[in-house]
Length: 515
Image: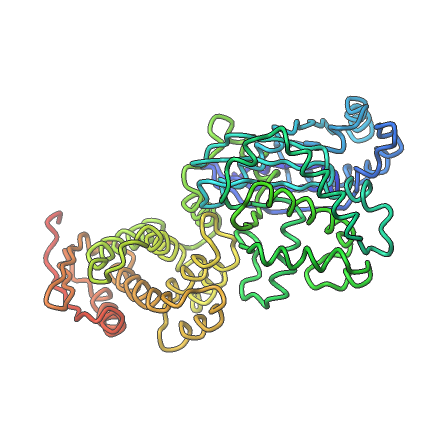
């Protein structure tokens, strides 16, 4: 029986509940998420206190979130509060009031704990070894430096999009910020960084953004560019992209800003201070590019709760694939592992023919993803599973893959050179590189060959020995019987393979030495 785990994040801008379903083997997926804007930062008075009436105003929402947990059968729950309550003068009193009003036991995260949880969310879902994480919340901003997937420094500043909007944006007329207001806020942010030398001494690293500010900018940018993959996790933006928003969004009225495609109306005011914070810190740290992480604080809190001893996963891609295959996907895990093994054996033999060994690590990630997920679409409809698998791979938010790698993996999994492959290549030309068309044809035909050698999914072929020479690839196969289905499939895919690799294909079948 699978367990349900609830994570409640009482933030400065919004309150969220995420419910995870987890198997006995540790695989997990999200089965429910609820969110409500609360703007708790605005409920802290000039004396630094949050009064009981403010707590009572959020009690009905917290009670409903707890009811949702009961309905889902949640057995473990972690509720955490961040900057708005952490920085309030009467934080202990607020925790007591919430317990009295709702029965909820609330944990107040320190800035260090909040930064660490965000770090876990990033390294467990992205193939990034070094970077600077910036989490701009409503009432605080956390900056974390990591190298070789190890966290080195975290600092939390008591300013975020909501309280900075209140502090510097109160005099804004009709939503339009003046150059002076922008400069005053930037100057405040820059001065806050001065005692943290490590922020300035690690130039050239990617900036990985958590929270609503960068995620919202990503959605706006995708709409503006008519981007072909509307997924924010691992989406990349250049300095030019963010600079475009910096010179345009602050000078729009609220009404015009609310009409910006990709921008939610409840964020029309706080997107500007969030953007100013982001750009000021990025420039101070001399970042190289902006990456969006769809995983952050809540994911990190989950990993801390269920993997206390070792919350950092070894390989985000393998962990993500395991999560997908563990939930009602009608795929033989033994079969897809065998297909990946065959594909890698073929690749290792052929890579010298290709002459591009520099991208072999990426190519093997692509083969792993495509080989193990090519049949996931059968969960929806077996007879059209390849097309459904493409959608699954493109939109599942697979950890450890960039957007380019995600598109390539989907194309390789559904290799169909006369129809679907050319169409998908055209659809995602904005994401792919010129060399990727040849890569898709070569890896796609190679994968079809690997699938063909286990067409019956029975493992009747027990060993493969590929060799190249004289412009040909020869497969020496060992089998425990007559592999009728496999031979037919090899004949069907041989022409596409020969065209993609410019090699003739032959095979011989011998009795298995293990039989």
